[in-house]
Length: 59
Image (cartoon, rainbow, N blue to C red; front, top):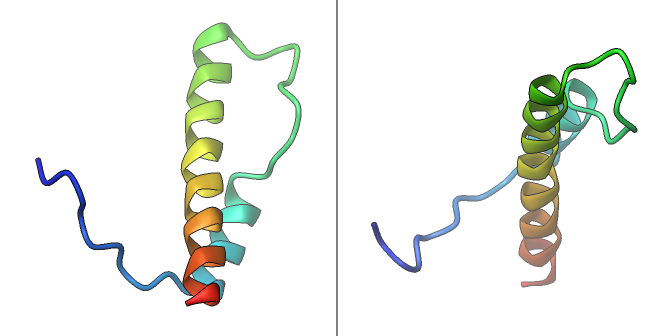
């Protein structure tokens, strides 16, 4: 695995889509641990892309 992979251009449209699809919200008490971990992982990816998008805008 490449240690420093090139980050592709991330569009604002993609960020809006993923942010809407996987919103940043508290866990539902009805969810199982597995569901909570899964949703948390999904949101973690969105947060990562948001940070990379912000850095992209600075350059």
